[in-house]
Length: 441
Image 1 (tube, one colour):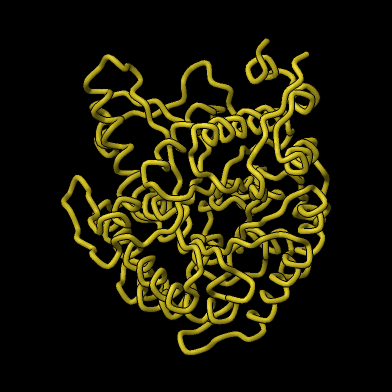
Image 2: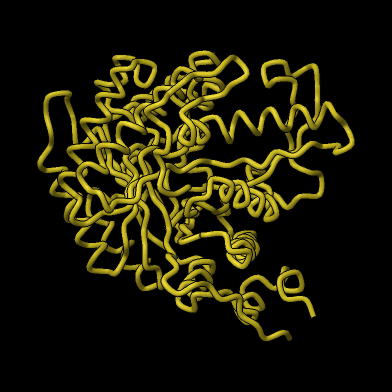
């Protein structure tokens, strides 16, 4: 058997990621309202107490992260808790988050904090949410309060998580609140998110000049089903550009470029210090006149792809390398802010984890400036419109009893973190079916 280790740079950040609504429980925001309507959540579940972090179980879960060799954690703060009304701040919530940040520090976990992870306070949603420019000023005010309060503990900020997903799922596909199907509204929301990010970026740097500020973009690899077909190549390039580049490109030169025209946003130019990259899977696409609403592109997984249990994710590690190469085109530090697979049986996750971390190592060896990797997720949590049907956790969670159970992948990832590398021995024990691919003779 080959004896080798794919070593990572000294000081590399190994962490996992969570978000407030998915783990805290007891929130009152646009998503808790959305969950009340039958048909919105596929298993009819509700976030409820989620993983009971607001009740204190963050302590034991962060203990598990630290004991597993992790040295960082990405989490979000809940806007609706901190600002329950436009003219009121909750000191109780601010103190609770301070306690969590102290807990992270005590455990040797460096925090990355996301300010907006899909949820809005109800008072903002009632005014139209991000369709209304009032959201920009409200988010700026919220950012100022949060950074003033937590700047002694946090220096890495993610302003908005997956703005492309927020706009597409809420305003095109209609499976996120507010459940609309209007591409023009989606583009208006995306432009306001760009403005909100840029306002937050400037506020953070005014309060904390040393801060690192970016966003987390969900990169979806989209390839033409037939590389020889100009029509397949056309729709692949169009959908990839719209989904992956519209928001991030505006932060480079202050122009949001879309098929329906360009929007100049000069205040956004140069407002990112790192690229936060979320990657899960890859699609193939063919030109099809029956899919007019999708710009005549029919997307699907390749026929021989290894699929997750609910067929939501295909194991496509080469797509991850493509995503990293795309992120590298911005000439900024790269942080892998999310990567993982839903797998309640933990049958696919070890191989997925080994192959994708190998792609990170591969990119680093081409001198791509990747500084950290955050696995999604530390434990099972409430997965938005998919409820509890998808289990992304290194640790299993029973939402009824709140019992935790360690999956083999948690031990595997713990060894990777502690070694600061991926070894042949680890892969042989945890992911033997991909051993020959990662460690060929």
